Length: 342
Ligand SMILES: Nc1ncnc2c1ncn2[C@@H]1O[C@H](COP(=O)(O)OP(=O)(O)OP(=O)(O)O)[C@@H](O)[C@H]1O
Image 1 (cartoon, rainbow, N blue to C red):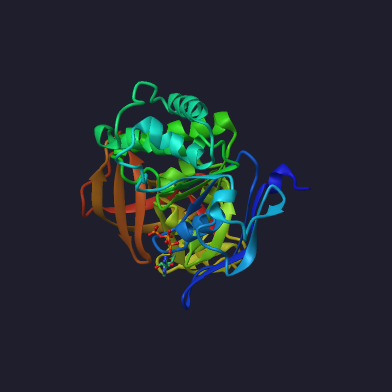
Image 2 (cartoon, helix red, strand yellow):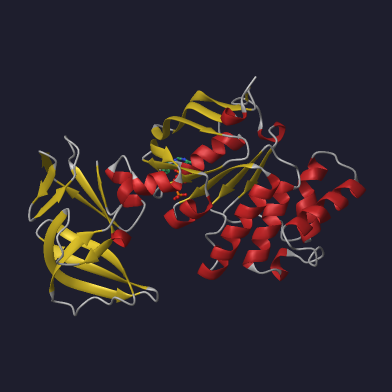
């Protein structure tokens, strides 16, 4: 018996290629209906993890458990898992309908059933008018939807998405991001989503597993990872954060040219979150000043870099509070949630 909380479990899973360890002792659980993202830099083992779940590679040690059953040694085609690859991997000589129906035909479904289910899956992803188009006659976003329909048509127990948005332009990416998330929630399908884009992971996931060099660094909800990162790696990988090394004595964190009050004993890193800092001389917990060396206008915000004695500190300030000219001396103050200690 398995609870819905432990629907998909990687139990100490390790993957080795030749003599190099790609994934090392990974233990992660996904609840039924959860969208779990694997987030990390290139080469950290995200795709390898997905391939172990799908069954394309066997774990060298450890287990993959789905719905209470150990599937580690089961061949790919006997696992009811849908996969969408970065490249979509559509057959160019088949129409959208036949691409989607392909998996069903492999499972010996009848012609009428294939057609009916493939059409329903294409309708689900908003491609009802494109059954007869070939991949070459579809836009990147439409091809991506066909690939998604093909993964969904088998009514998979788990959906695996390997960087499915990386070939799309920024605008379409944002649209597809929310489309996939609402579809996943509507269908209640347990999903593992691989990405190296922190915004994508934060926007789409129930929980995010941060990976580095084949290891799980940290796992948590997007909000908890952003507000209370437990490692410097997570803090800096989640973007727009400055991590400063220092020491804490009597509740005060100190680094060259910087102090910050409210630190727990033993803290050796101060994480400053760019969007929760401001340029200000007002007194507060943070004491640091420096020179503005860069200010980039990003539309709704400015990204400003302050060169200080403890390194460059990045701030994101609203565009209605433009930073002073480059070269100006400024002090920085933190707003609630702007400073975290590790
Ligand atoms: N078939 C293979 N043979 C040998 N080594 C491999 C193979 N596939 C991946 N690797 C290595 O395993 C490690 C993890 O690769 P993996 O593709 O899982 O990383 P990733 O996090 O998905 O990266 P990316 O974001 O670039 O796709 C890397 O060091 C990679 O070079």
